Length: 244
Ligand code: PGA
Image (cartoon, rainbow, N blue to C red; front, side, top):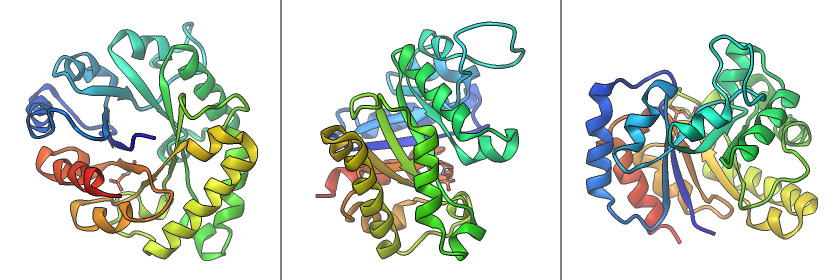
């Protein structure tokens, strides 16, 4: 499988930030891994015009309708996106979204021809209670539709307590979780589960990327803060290219 370095700009990004993507493209004209930047809907068309592969950060389960302020998966595709994130913990926290909604959004992304990056992750309290694997299994049961394939879907493990905090699990913890996720995916989806990309996300930066990418079953990263500037994201892409 081809590895994936995915950026998530969240509610950041104006036209003035587009030169960051041009700089990234100049650094990685022909990357040996997939590179995707998921950005705000307002910027997608202009992001795509730089030549970089772009994705949305969320989509509505319906293709169209009376949902003021929402963005549908066909709209993302129309704006030039080829990917979409679903299940991000900030959607759970900010908008009280559920696994069932994430499953519906994932189906909507596929129906529009988008590759879905589906996020899962435990909170700090769940981590401290030793519930991480139970939480992740329940999230995957509820949010990954039965017809997921390796071609249409990437799973991103993002511990909520590691997002934007500068904290990360130890390499051993990441390796253990990813091994358990791989076992779950293989048991549920067979060959597709064995080859479905598994990203780690949460405070990935140039200084920890090599250690994280060296781990078994880590097929790339979903990167928030360090994807905003080419100078920060470019070495992460290089680290992924150089990983075994
Ligand atoms: P972070 O965000 O890299 O800023 O921790 C990751 C994410 O939320 O996808």
